[in-house]
Each structure stands twice: as structure tokens, then as C-alpha cells.
Image (cartoon, helix red, strand yellow):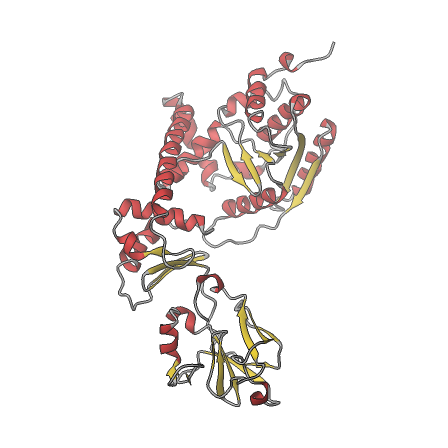
Length: 458
């Protein structure tokens, strides 16, 4: 007699997982992040039994970090187990290198999620086997790091990942409840020896702290997870309010904020807006110390100052009334001198490229250039230029000020010289004596540089 899902162990859990997944009617493919450990083995087995009732393709993915001597054996175990269940399994090998500000656990997790995100098409689901005890551990770690409500919200059940969604269908179930299904489901799994390493914070909490808490408060795991849920609600309210406020404090350039508008906000709201802005721009949200420095050092700085607060992969700078969040400034190119025979010159340090294009009489005069090659330099002191239509030669500092180019960008602007004379500055100015008057000239274009979208006239 065929076994139906209602006759199998773990009925309540299976039905809860099915109910959650049916809430994504547009999803066409469901992935299971399968490590081979006990928790993900339970999830995979449940989904295999639910497969006839799922309206989406079911696949598994195993990410091999290469950090354990037996990593290849684990990958083989996962592949064999999936084959036995008739579930296609993708094996992905990732390289875990050192990451600024991250320990080995965080670096491995970042590499893993990057690999998982790359698999998802629009609307695809990636299921992980995180459960209620994982949630409690995550909350305690966040508390011990002094996190705000966003960190204390711990792990959401559904979150964006790549082009699809990350779904944690087991968050309402404890480790004990899940592990009770191992024998009825006839599972074999991999024991990761690193789980016994108590020098890792999460392992220490799991092995020493949570059992002690449960001894005194048996429902500790459940109540900690509930507190994480309350923090998630609070974090959602903060995010909504910050998003609404953010719309009213935009700066004069794309992606910037108005310093004056930020200074009028309550400090707590200002911090929330800054966090939302930095996150939305694709950067890692700073900790409390760096946020405090933005409020204390950058916002109230003099209009002619160039304050900077930086952390891993991000810089916050101010120029006049605008606040910028940027990739770290490239190293100074001052020592570079590049011969340019045209038409295109790739610049060093990610500073884009220069190109000579057929243009109007406002461009460079080919005859004036002669046969000598152009030279591109950066940050040469004392040079002047009289752009077309200007009555006098000006120091470049003053031209940059008039064009609203911040001091921290100016030293990275390419200057084009011929025979030691300044010919052109970036794609903005051709200097007096080098114009193609009345005929066709060569227009200088500077593109692909980090500030291309910020409306600096360079």
C-alpha cells in the first residue's frame, strides 16, 4: 500500500513547510542548501517527500569550502544522497580567503551565500535548514556584539537573495524536534568536526551557554526567538520611517544627502537615515562608532573642509552641502606619466580611460598638436589654463572650485600635456592655443572613472 505524506513521520513539520512554500505561487524552482549535516538532511528528506505536491522544480546545492580534509568526501556523500532521492544536486567549490573585518566563520559564510545567490533566477527560492536554536544563538551573538534592533532581529524567515529569495522554513522548530526525525526518516549525515571547536563563538554558545540557560529556563530557546521577532518588528518600523525621511533629505547630486537637512534631524533618526542610505547604496552598514563620527566630525565640518570617515570598503565624505558615500579613493596617481598616442588610453588605478573623438571646433586642433605624443599626468602643481570663452588664465584649483569638483577628486583628474604645456583637463577644458578654431577638432572624453555619475564637470 503506498505511503502518503499524512502517514509519514514529521507530518506537522512537513505540512508547515508545504504551507509556507505554497505562499510563493510564482516560484518555479526551489533549491535546498544541503551541507550534508543533520539539519539540512532532515530538510532535504522532508522536501523529497513533499515533491509530488510542490508546484516547482526541486534541486539541491552543496557548497564545498575546501576548509576540511574530508571536504571531497562530504561532497561525494551529498551527491550520492541526492541521487538516491532523485534530486539533482549542484556541487560548488568556493575559495575562502581573508576578508577585512571578518573572522573565518564570517568569511566562509559570505563566500557560501555569494555562491548560493548566483544560482537564483527571478523568483527562485533558496531554502536553508536554520531552526529556532540557531535563531537563539544568533540573537545572543548580536547582543554580545552590542547590535541595534536590526542585528537583534536575527534571521528573517524570508529575505532577498540574488534575484530570488532566501527562505528558512524550519525557524519555528527546535533542534531537538528536528533531530527526533532522524531515525524515523532513516537518515545518515555528516558530522562536521569544526562544530566541536569551542574557540568559535557560536559553538561555545551552543555547547555551554544555551544548555545552561535551558536548565534554568526550559523555554529559553523559544522565548529568545520570540524576542528576535519583536526586534524584527521594531527594525521594520525604523526602516520604514528612515526610508520615508530619506526621501526628503536628498542632496544636490545623485546618491548624495543634504548636510543641512541631516543636521535638522533628531540624532537617533539621523543615524537611522544614514544606515538606510549607506545600505541602499550597496555598502556595509557602519558600526556605532563610525556612525557617531559621521555625526560629530563630517556633518558639522566647515564648508571648505574635506572630512572623511572610512571603514572596510566604504568612505563617507562631504563637499560643500552634500554628503557622499563612495568606494575607497584610489591611491594617488601623482607619480604616473603616460604617453598617449591616441585614440584611447586606459588609465591606471581604476581611473577609467581617455579617448580622442572627432568633434567640433571646440576640441583639440590636430595641427597644433603636431606629430609629438601627448603625455598624461596627475596633480602637477602650478599649471594654469584659459578655457575657451574665458578672458583669463586661471589656476586649476580655481577652475575646479568653479566646476564644483571636490578637493579629494582633483588629484585624480587626468591632465593632458604636449611639449610640457597643459593642453586639456579631463574631458572638461581645452586650454587656449590648442583649440580647433573654425574646423573639426578632437574632443577629449574621460569615462569609466569612479565619479562619472556625480555631475562633476570633469
